[in-house]
Image (cartoon, rainbow, N blue to C red; front, top):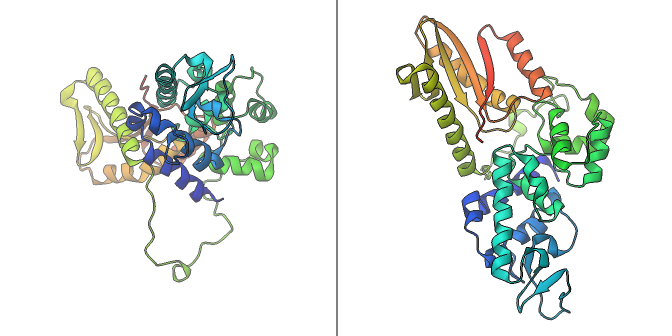
Length: 346
């Protein structure tokens, strides 16, 4: 399965199960035996290619079961006439689902705010937990969920810490090549092994396979593409923009901070300088820069004010080790003050 297909699967999931939908999900929407369009079924069967847990349905915490098969009633598992669940979550379906839903929402909130270590201490099955975390992480996690697999990769990359998934994920992400998606990163590992991941270097103008198709050979028929979780991206952008706007007003005063003037996210006016801020919700500094740099340069070109110009790309997360290499490369080739900043949403 190619990268575009994997992204399409992930985006279909996010469009079907946006955060607000999950916050208000019912038990029947979460799991109903024989019903395919449920959250748990999407994670298990439709999204399995992205990293299925491959274990029993008890990983969901609670699930609708086939009443024609023998019951699961033991000290560890309980059930009623329709649902089975892990006894540690409670004694009745309502109580259990309330706890399960709370944990799933917590996973999404932790990953959104960059607090992935908090996911370690939840009660849902670990593989299921991290599968959900990946789906809502905006590619801030690598699609490896097994502790041993992660440890083998991280250890070979120089990791010396404990077998904690959050710490190993952070370590591996820090060393992901800039401008490479997590699916490409996973594919690189699957195809070439860990040594090639370690030795992969940023090549700013590398063209895969040498040549691009001439236009006459390309498919000119209308194609339909699923755009990735537009509402989720817009909401994240708005949160980041508001947080940055409030911070700049507090520091420079409201008269000097302009919001959405001539389509610029934020414009800061100082006696000696004008700074253009553009916010991006991508999870990596290099991706934010790649998508916004041309736009910011055009703002500087079109602005007639004679004061010196500075451009700032603002994202949620601090730059990784590989992002810093990319940022330094950009600074070395443009003759204008440039900076990347991160905005803490927590």
